[in-house]
Length: 192
Image (cartoon, rainbow, N blue to C red):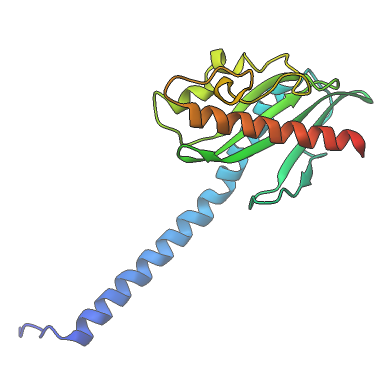
């Protein structure tokens, strides 16, 4: 059998076929995993809501409101928790793109009086061992039960009341900015 001559057209055809097969395979995997990924994200959100607001009996996800924030491609999500007809808390996703490694997204839970019930970090890409400590219970506890109306969410270096993480002041500032954004949304909702 005669060996086929390697030409530009043959190489181009082979490359096209490999690219076509790869594209179909990737699209199949994307379609197959889209549902489970969105379901897992929803479960994480529901778990975060349960962690940051008092006990509730409604479905905050079905009552979610979205608010557009200037300077962000994502809108801010607001989840109202109720026990019967009484509003027991509000979970708000706040974000800051000024983390050391980019976006920090938190879910801050507020009691009806504006005090912080709890905070969960939803997304961050900070330096392991330094900035990732924003997820630690010890760090978050300095925000819990504080009302941002009287508790300055800036780090102490900037004249505020928050103890910055050692070696991760930028991450701390971004975390505080995300919580502050959530609080400002909470206050604006009270006016409506």
